[in-house]
Length: 237
Image 1 (cartoon, one colour):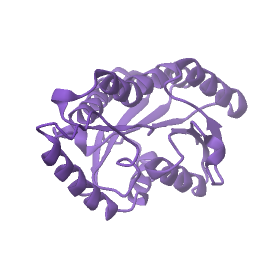
Image 2 (cartoon, helix red, strand yellow):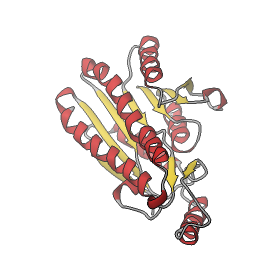
Image 3 (cartoon, rainbow, N blue to C red):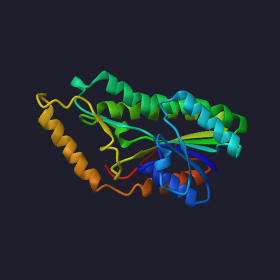
Image 4 (spheres, rainbow, N blue to C red):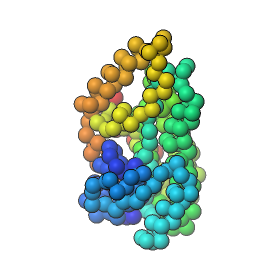
């Protein structure tokens, strides 16, 4: 299979790309700094928030390899902070990256998949999309929105033999907390002490989190299935 994966510089994306490459698939992993990725799978530069760039990368892959069988939407960012004082530009940024940019990629790839009457789209979301966590509200909302859009898409695309799957990981050892937007963590805020207590607690748990390879194993299992489910939750919380 020819597989396009976003956000493969580290974490789930890199684990998934490595696993699928070793399994014999033609993997194209993207990142804003693809040249920094040390691996054997093919890489391309892509800023998913650049819509024109996304369209060009998809066209280039189809031109080189003849098709894209599977799209794995993995790239994303985190945002934490009290919602009362959250900077709206930060909230919009997390939705742009975690929601709108992925929908744009899906829109660009669907005409190709429809013409082939075949395709699989896998979205790496989060268990945070199923519940509202304190000080993670905007992040939870961005993941929940993507979950729902994918469920709608899955129904719309059935007649074209295209499946859409959500994978929602729990606690895994990735860079999501270090790569987060800390929206207005003001030391004078009435939320300051509780916010830091929650973030430090989560940091401690995720530093000893599960191996991202478990998620890669699940992706490989889903690819082999004829009729995958829409939603998969994996790992602890």
